[in-house]
Every structure is written in structure tokens, then in C-alpha cells.
Amino acid sequence: MENMQYAEELVREFLVFRGFTNTLQAFEKELSTDIGKGFQVDKILNLIFSVYITNFQAEKLVGLLSFFKQCVSSSETVLTATLAKLEISILRYYIVHALQSGRKDKVVEFFGTNGNDLLLRGQDWTSWFGGSEKNTVKHLKKDIKQLNMKLSQLQALLEEKEAQLSRLKNNSETIKYANIGQTKNSTLASGVNEESLLLSTNSSEACATTATHMGSAEMGQTWASSRPALSRFATNMSGNDSISPSKLEFEDVGAGDIIQMFNDGLYTENGRDAQGEEDFPEVKVDFLETFLGHTSPISCCRFSSSGNNIASASVDGTVRIWTYDSSTPASRNATIYCGTEIMSLEWECKSDRLLLIGTADGGIKAWNVDAKRVVCDLNTTDAFPSVLDLKCSPVEPIFVSAAASRRYGSSNIYSWGFASLTVWNMKTWKAMTVLPLGEDPPAITSLCFNHNGKILAASAVDGMIHMFDMSAGLQITGWPAHDSAISSILFGPDETSIFSLGFCDPESSKSCRHEMALDVNGRRLLVTSGSVRAPIYQVRGHASGMRTLPHGAAITTVDWHPTLPMFLTGSADHSVQVMSLS
Image (cartoon, rainbow, N blue to C red; front, side, top):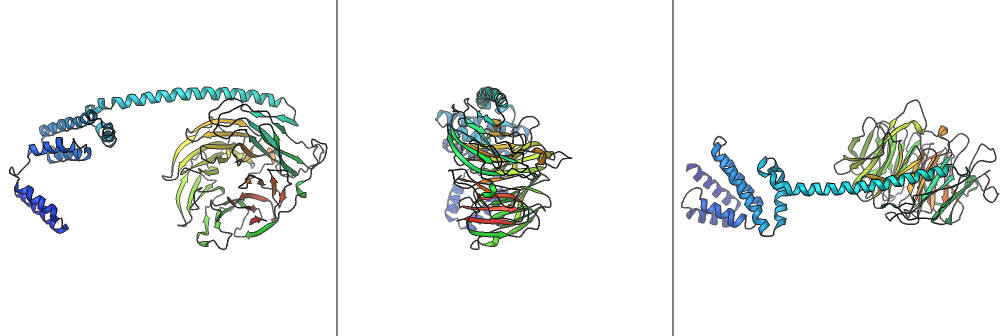
């Protein structure tokens, strides 16, 4: 009794101190009518059955029952067991009352809040979860059936593609047809048509090839039959050592556009030699800014999502963040020391806040440009130390890393071994899933999302292009696009085409990868070059190409501004140039 009076005094003191005068009056009134001076069963039962259960106040009901258990000493085993049985009966009554009242939502809410705790109590509640388990099993069986059907479709698609590939190999070496995918698939567009073209080289470098894969319907529609498109592979008929690119244009042939490319000293379809790349006119620019902040060759450069900032990496393991525009604050400018070779850069798609950096030792760093610090330092598995590419989803807070194992004793692009594709959550900074590539897959060199992030394209060193459904986390199709390694891949502006950049000569392919970039309108294709100038090919219309302003050494990286007719080129001479077309 003395303890009860002391507690009442504490309550009065608290209410007076907080100024809860109305509550104090109600408290005094309740005390004056408290005849039993202790637990009053009738009032407690009235509170439970007339208030908490009737008004579906499950949280308060559970809290009251927990309070009763706390009031009983653990040594009083009989009373403890009685309270446990009483709690089970009252909670079951709450569930039955909710169902009889047509309030299934309250039942779902109750189990959602307390389900895990109830399951831990043993057999008393197991049978009450039987319905949900039955539904789960039913849904799983349905999913298995759908996956089996999808597997059958993919197997049929694979068999047809293998047959088409066999027919392709029997065709002429100079004129080839490729019309991949005339079967039905629920995810991709109709008819992936393949065209190939020769780009940059000299006698000491790799001969890069670009292929576009097109369809007559938009991504996300059903596959439909399409007319075959002619693919032309130029062959050096003159015996000259040097091969230089000349002209890039689109023809309207059947299902989609076809890129056609002829080279100096090559036999063309009309018997004439084409204009060489060195004869391209020099690009006319309104603006030129040269950045000289690096002390070693540039390995990668990227515009931020707004285009206001640029991240550039060099082979000495440093990344510089800078701006070319004097009107843009330089508060984000920074130098990041990674201490190892940098293999990939990627800006967050929705803002300029985060920059992802992939390194050769399996590291993925997330740099916050406002805080000027690394906010997360991730690591791939030891088996896949080379982070060859990183791509952020345009709609979701996720990114995908393409990591590869290492083969020793080789210095070319084929020094990369097996591939691993990992999806990461950018809120928790944890790996979500690993995309399936099959057993011992060749290294993935380049990644690209479509506009809504539902499709991911990936290119590999064996010349394959893979397509993934990101919502299902499954590979939905793939096809051989090149006879050798693919270095870069891009979706076309209408997303019914894919551009891929590869190598003609595997033995001369250096460890540095060639890159390409499309402008915002998809009309110009900028490609890295072994010379001091980079070619800009016209992929829309029949205008001739252009050449960028010169660096002092080879062009190692390129990128287009996300919204403006502006591009950047990084060079082995340690410089980065930003140019705006006139």
C-alpha cells in the first residue's frame, strides 16, 4: 500500500510539473471512485473486450497483456502459465472478432506486426499460419511453372540462333547477312539485325570494329519477323598496312537503318575508293577548354548528370573533379587518390552528388562531391579484382558492377579472365544479387541501361552481347556480335539499336579499351583514336564526318555532354579538352 501511495504521489508530481492540469483532475476523480484500491477485474475486462477488441486497438491490447506478464514473478510458474494461456485466448478472440466483423485488414495488420513474435512461441500459433504458408506454396508453384515455360522459350530461341550462326559462317567473308531473333520473346523488340564497320587503326594498333543491332519495334514489345538486313564487312584488298576509316552513314533497308563504312584502299560496292578519315574536315568549335591538372595519361573521363562537372582519371591512380565553366562554383573540385589503377568511372544518374570509382584491386569507391570524402568503400570478391565497368540505373538507387578475374602472362585485353555481374543497393551499399552468366563466362567489358532501367546490355571479350531483365534478374537473350573482344556498348537513341565497338586484331589489342559516345540526339558518334584527333561520325543523314582538334598524343577516352552539343576528349598527353560545336 505504501508503494502504491508513493507511485500516486510521483504521478501527481509529474502531472503538476508538466502542467497537465486536466489530466490531474481526471486522475484525482478516478482515485476518488477507486473502492477496491487494487486490480479491479471487471474494469480490466471491460477495457479489453469493450474498448481494445471492439475498436481493434491491437497494439494497446498486446501492450496491456505484456504488462500483466511483467507484474508476475518468474518464480510463480503456475500463475505465469495461466497468464500465457489467457494471453493466447484473448489474442485469438481478437482475430476471430475481426474476421466476423469483416475487418480482414486488421487481421493482416495484426500478423504483420506480431507474426514473427508469435511464431517463436512454438506450437500454440503454428496452425494459425497455415493459410499463409499454403498461399506461399501456391504462388511458388505458379512461379516455377512460368519459369519453366520461359526456359523452354529461351532454349528454343538459343537453338534457332545457333542454326542461324551456322548459316552465317557458310556465307561469303565480304558480304554477310545477320537477322538474329525471328522468334517470339516477351521482353525484347523485333529482329536484331547486325551490321559491322571498320573504324580506327594503323599498323601498330588494333583495328576497332563497330556493329549496330537494330529492330523495327521498340524495346519492350513482342518479337516479330523482320526483313533481313545486309551486313557489309570491308576487307583490305590493296595490301596496304594502314587502314583508316572514312565515311559512316545510314541506309534505309527493310526493318531498320544500317551503318555502312568504307575505308581508304578498300574495294567499295561501286568500285571506288572512299574518302579517308584524315580527309574529314576539322570540327568548328565555339568553346575550347583544356585541362592540364593530371601528370600521367588519361584513362577515363565522364560528364556529370547535369554536365556541370567532369571527373577524369589517369593511370597514376588519381581522379580529378573539376568544371570547365567559370560560372559554375569550383567548390566541388577535388583530387581523389586511389593508390591503384582506375578502370571505370560512373556518376549517379539523378544528381551530381555521387561519383563511383572502380579500381583494379576490386575496390568500388563512392565519392560524395559535396562532403568531399569517400562515403562508402566496397570490395568485390578476391576472385574478381578488376572492376571493368560501373553503370547506375536511370530510375532506381542501384548500380551494376562488371568485375573480372585476372590471367597472368598477357598484356592485351584478353588478360581478363572470367566475369562477374553484381547488382548493388545505393542506399544500404550492399550487394543485392549476382546476374547469371553461365559457367566460366568471359569477362564483361561494358554495360548500358535502357531509358527505364529495365533492360541491361553487356558486352564481353568473346564478342557476345548479353541482355538482362533487371526486374527478374535473368538473362533474356544474347548473340555473337563480333569475332573478337567488344570494348564498348551503347543503346541507340530510340533503343531499337545497339552500338558495339570491338577489335579486329586480338594480338594488338592493348589493355586499355577503346571507347565511343553518342551525342544527346544520337546523330554523332565520337570514337577514341590512335592518332591525335578523334573521328566524329555522322550516324543520321549522309553528311561526312569530322575530326576533333588535336592533342599531343593518342585519344584514350571520350564523352558527350548529356544535354548540349559539347564533348570531351582525354589523351595520353595528360590533357583533357572540352569543346562546344558551333
